[in-house]
Image 1 (cartoon, rainbow, N blue to C red):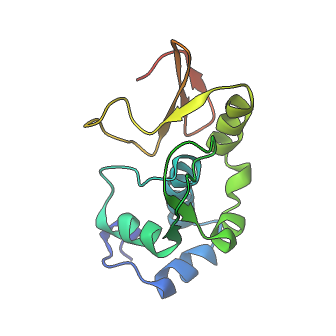
Image 2 (cartoon, one colour):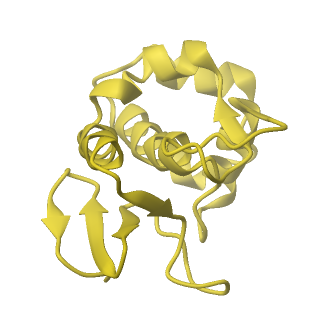
Image 3 (cartoon, helix red, strand yellow):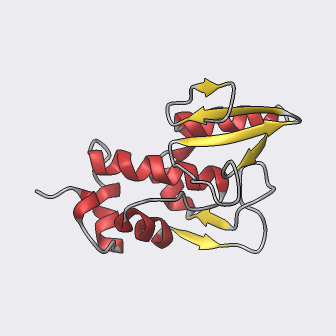
Length: 143
C-alpha cells in the first residue's frame, strides 16, 4: 500500500477515510499538520501536495484573524475536523494556548521569506523568543 504522502490529489473521501482511522500514521500526519494551521491560521510551508490540498479542503478563509492569539492568520479549520482530530488535546496546541494566555504572541515564521515548518510554532513576548515544538516541548530561542 502506498503512503498518504505519495497519493495525489486529496479528496474529501480520502480525508474521511483518514479521519476514520485514528490509529493510523496517516491520521497522525494529518493531525500534526492541522495542529499548526489551527494554531497559526496559515498553511505550513513545504508540504507535499496531498497535505496542502487536504488542509485546504478542511478549512475556510475568514475575514478576521484566526490564530490562537487572535492577531494573524485567515484560515480556520472546520470545527468537525478540529474535534475529530482532537486538536485541542494536541501537545503543540496545548502548550501554545498556555503561552498565549501568558501574553506570548504567535509568529508564523522567523521572517517574511522564512519557512513555516509544521513541527514548530514561534512565539515572542517583548524581546524574548521561544519555539514550541510538535511534541509540546519548548526551546528558549527560535530554531
